Image 1 (cartoon, rainbow, N blue to C red):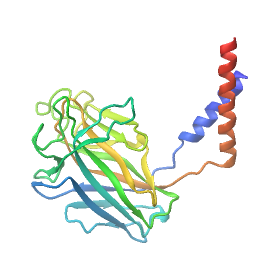
Image 2 (image 1 turned 90 degrees about the vertical axis):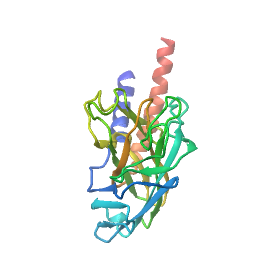
Image 3 (image 1 turned 120 degrees about the horizontal axis):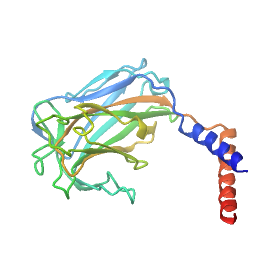
Length: 264
């Protein structure tokens, strides 16, 4: 019975964590010079009938294209929302939630931070208050519900510079739907500025399901900025009836296994 339960669990996990093959991706990069903005900055990304993308916003540049036909002709609305303080509590699944509103600030390169203290425009922390930025897909119109829009990387700047950035500087990226998170400490990990891979967090929403999707927040020491992020579209895989049946069987067998273990 134990072997059967272990086999069912292995098959179940294999079926649930398999993801579709990566598709072509689009990168969003902030442009423009120094400016203090309001609490949010938004852009619309229009996808034409071939997967090419464009935006009317003069503050962002796009590169790349999309290949999922269910997204052709659709619009992805993106909003960056500054937080003066974000929750760092992963135990109660609030990590990445905005606690206090903030204002965005762009440096000479257009990189986005949070205005003023504690890091003069970078995304920083005073050890108690942790600044951050929320990313929302606030519009996913004319995109089929069977298509997911997934963030695969976030472009972080002003990090990993030996002799410039402090030891212990870190940042955390959060999936705001599951509240799973990844923390990076660039100097300790020999990482430099650029696009940090967050594909393991599976940060996505499907067509028609708009809302907040990700957050990036400072650790106890910080002062970084973000330039934008990379996203892709993919066909959402719906489990076959046989997979759903296996899910139920696997759950029953695990319960039975625990009962046998307790008795024996």
